[in-house]
Length: 72
Image (cartoon, rainbow, N blue to C red; front, side):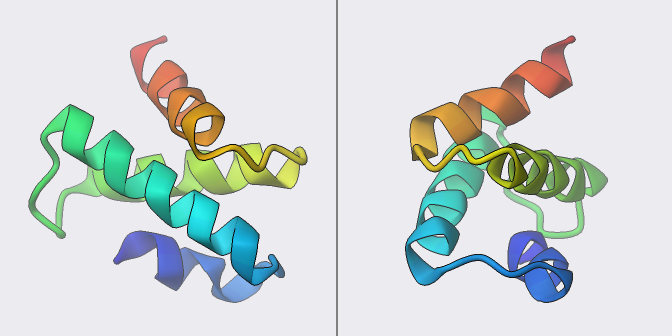
């Protein structure tokens, strides 16, 4: 999963990682990104990490942050 691979360089507590994972899976489901090799999955993961770095911890807000980045 791209999210876990990209988290290697970041320090987040377990609750935040869980929220980020939920956001990532939801965003990928909404976008129809089933293939693990899709480059857009990496983009989604990076955006979720960026949003979490600002202090956001709500999975829905993290998901929406990534979706907003993709759409505009």
